[in-house]
Image (cartoon, rainbow, N blue to C red; front, side, top):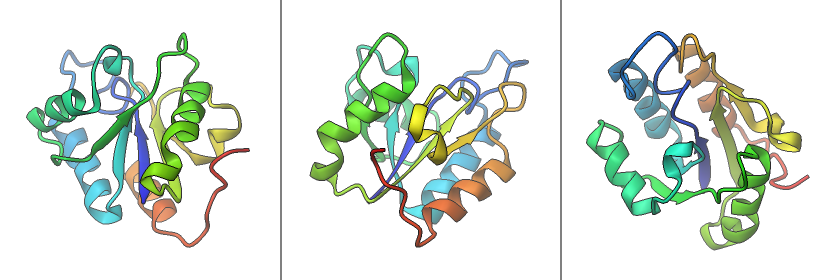
Length: 147
């Protein structure tokens, strides 16, 4: 299974908008999901206090393909890389995660930065970003999940 760790702000929207889920960005994310068959793990602060099912409902209500959220990372005082590592330690074997990619406008990911496609807060998710994620998740190269 492929897992895409998803931030929301700065990915599904950009700095000059008051819209949390821009239709164009949602469409681009759906393109990634369809092309890679990846599932989502939400890393955004939007996840705090929410179950994966609740996050799936939120994302689905905004046009993202339904049934794709398999998890939310734990809240470790905004240490994004550690939060992803903890989720992987707890769930990677259970879900059979073989490959990950991370969509985020931040880069505080430690050794997981190798799996990051960093978006621009000013632009959000672009077609170019999507193509990088698709190429990586569909490649035969397997990034070690834990450094």
